Amino acid sequence: MSREELTTWRSLWATKGAVARNLVRRAAPADRALLAANGPREVRWATVYLALCVPGVAWATWYLVVYAVPSIARIAHLSLGAIGTDGLVSLSGVGGALALVLCFGPLDWTLWGVARNAARVARTTLRPTPAG
Image (cartoon, rainbow, N blue to C red; front, side, top):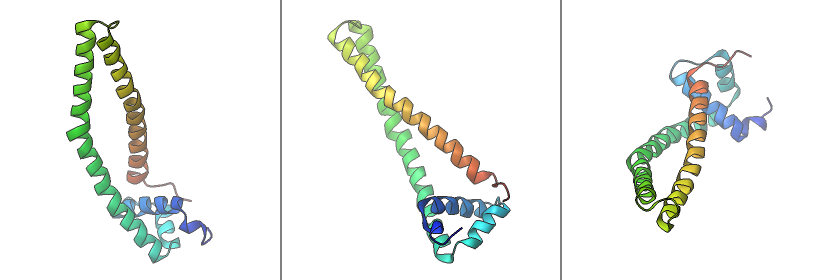
């Protein structure tokens, strides 16, 4: 790996993962080789990135649980109430259905991406990488 390749964002992400696995004592030989190949500056920045990433994910999760989920539940309750009370063909029923589509369409897409990314991060962080 050339010196220029070691300074890319992919290298930062890989080095952050190697630092995380090293901290939880799950580092594979490839992780140790990556940490040795990077200079102390790159490892330090990867450690800073990891230190910012963990609280950022925790804060985003807290925000989701405290604010987003109750808000979405309220929107769903109001929308379903409008559809149930006035019927789907009424103005408020169409508004309720539209609110459900506009709220839950992007939400489903986002949750799918979050779950897929969380699974990938957990896999790469908790499992040692293959040697080589």
